[in-house]
Image 1 (cartoon, helix red, strand yellow):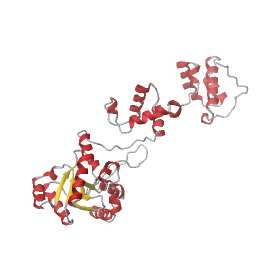
Image 2 (cartoon, one colour; image 1 turned 90 degrees about the horizontal axis):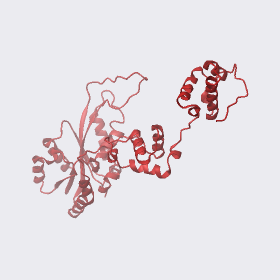
Image 3 (cartoon, one colour; image 1 turned 90 degrees about the vertical axis):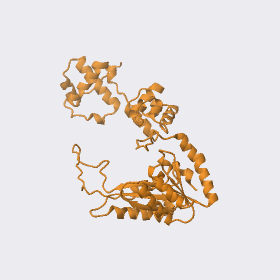
Image 4 (cartoon, one colour; image 1 turned 180 degrees about the vertical axis):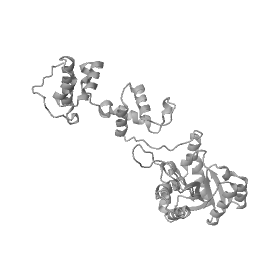
Length: 355
């Protein structure tokens, strides 16, 4: 190793902020300070004072020297993902993550984390890298932390594919032949002040959120079709056969002609009372059922997503404001905007149902 020589005296120099020095300059001062203590026997405090650096900074340097000699004091500049991984390796990592989950690679956890990606890179590529480097790699690939759309393990991919490729296309052809309109229906619940998620407060002081104890709640059932038509009613209590039949009656009273209504497999949808009502309509209404555990196939799900992101939950209720009036307002805005309703059929998971 080359000897390090400083040609000027540092005695009486004002303290230097090490953060303002470039890597090479700080490296030289680090090695000089350790050399003067170890080889020349100078006191650490005197050395650091003469260099104009903080007295305590030398002790981690001395520890590094003890652990790895002078080599340990050489500045190691963190490499970015571009230098650590080839482009082929970067794209391979992206391919591992997108559309798959860690369980497919032998891990017992279903969500990606930097630590899991780190372990997979080590296992598959033999590259050791820190969590920070993994984070930079993912960011450079435009892969960000997101709340996942959870799908039940009971979901049957074969049934989903069959619905998209065969069952629904056949249903659409039959509807066209009979002059029927296809609607998708679903239910959702809303609350006035769900104390969920995060809020702001002073660091180290957990905020206390006091609720009124008079939380308002309301349920909604709606139906949409690809032509932009929309129907909805609100209700209280649980969905069961006794409540679902009046919903169907209300819905059919607003419709003309033949209707095919697509719903999920909720027991209320398959109750005997529902079957009896449908039979009494003598062919005007048919219920058709989505595959189990596949809510993402229902365009009506986007009604709730829209309301919770742009309506009911976007602005908190004020004192004495009614949740019913807020929901009615949101439902009316959707009803008056066929273009918005049609947009619910544009998502990748429901594009199969687009006209």
